[in-house]
Length: 153
Image (tube, rainbow, N blue to C red; front, side, top):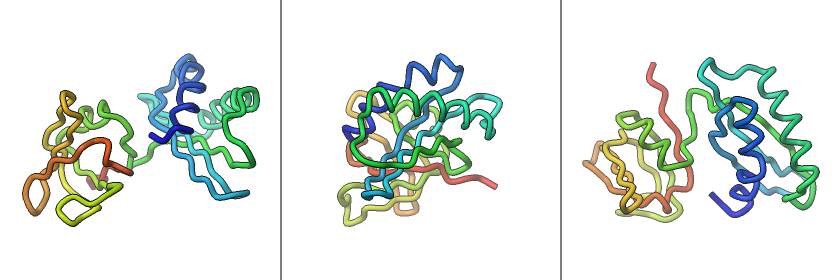
C-alpha cells in the first residue's frame, strides 16, 4: 500500500471494524479534481447498498476531521465483488488455490502481468508462488502493484 492508503487505513479501520465489517483494502487514484478514494468492505452475509451508505457516512465524517487528502476527491465504498482485490499476505493465504491476475511494479522474467493459481505463500520472506501456464513463478509481495481473484463460473 502507498503511504496515503496506509494513513487512511489506520484512520478508518477501527470504525469500520466496530461497525461489524472487514476493511478489505483501500485504493487512491490521484487525478486532480477527479481523484477517487475507494474503500472495500465485506461481511459474511455479503455487502448491500445500505452497508455502503452507512460506512460511507462514517468514513466521510472521519476523513473530514483528519483530512489526510489535500484537494477534492470522490469517496466510494464498495463490496470487493467477484474479482476481489487482494491487498495483504493474509488475503493470499485465505485464497490459496484460487486463480488470480497479478500486475507488478516491475518485470520478472520479462513480464509484469501474471495469471495463475496461488500455489503457496511464505510469510518468512513475503513471497507468493503462482502456478502459471509457464510453470511456477515466485513473486515478492512488495512487487505486486495490483492483484485480483479471477471468478470461477
